[in-house]
Length: 198
Image (cartoon, rainbow, N blue to C red; front, top):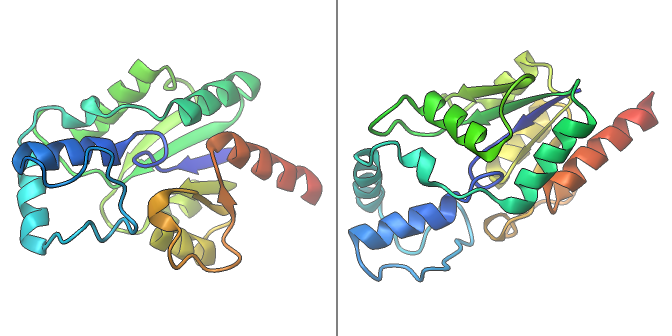
């Protein structure tokens, strides 16, 4: 089987890292444990604010290596790779370029440091905004993302789109969106569906 997995918000804790940098740039701007209600709308940030934040983060050397993994989902991937070494996992991300190594290299190093890189694992960095086309070209059996708008799009264009339940994707969630609490649930649901269909 082939799985397409988003990284930030799914395997890596992007929100905590980004909140840290926002507060480095503007001390006290957000509570340390801040969680957005909608990933596209953070508090009262303007486009100018976003540009300033990304400019600040972009100057941090190898910033993507500073993100902490989500322990539960990291464990689920590691166990899945042990149980099903024949499966392929493609990490598909829209990460911005920052100082240091190319984003793909930073991501590959980060996955290796987490113990979930190696044979059967690929990394695709794409900022075209069309992950659905990538999942389809890779012939993924299923894909998962934490961004509601992305999953709604994937749902209409790909096979097996799932939403990882997060605080920022609960508002406005339409009925019928397949949702998982973690990646263990995701892998189990996809394999169960595949067996039921065969």
